[in-house]
Length: 186
Image (cartoon, rainbow, N blue to C red; front, side):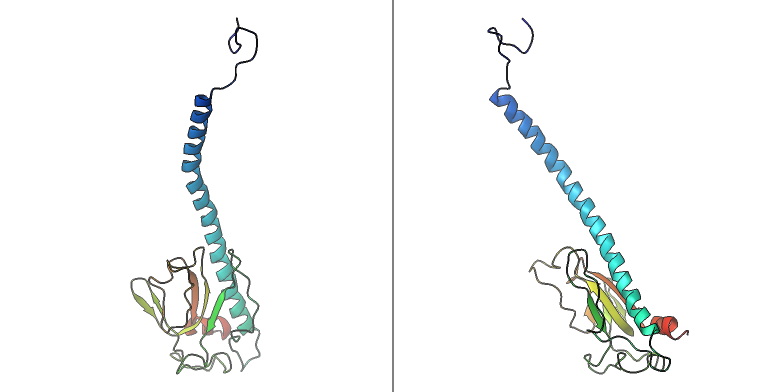
């Protein structure tokens, strides 16, 4: 009698116990592989998010560079169509403009003529490190909705506090000095 056949010649199938063990092993393997796969996909999206934010930063600088001499300025908050981040959410663009109390409006005046410490927009980074004289900020809320409440950080406070409330946000900024170097050639 050959192996795998019953005495009456019919093929022998898997028992319920063998099927259960097979499913158990398959489930254990999926449990080990799934988090690594998710992390890999998330890492690629985060890298793409950083590239998207950097491209939007360059788009804002390029827009300012194309303005006529003597009228170099930042675009207003609604003046540019920025791309969406990899999570299909709009990017956040915050220029130092009249909406920030006491700020020189870099969206209407000639930023090449602006004083070195003309901006009031500030960022607080982990550390905490306070970045002053910020000309504009570009941000993405990242993969998670930012915090345990499921709500996005609004970026309405000044200084913008990026220490804990925006754990996975992708943020880029340009100071007035950097912007002047790009746009005004200084």
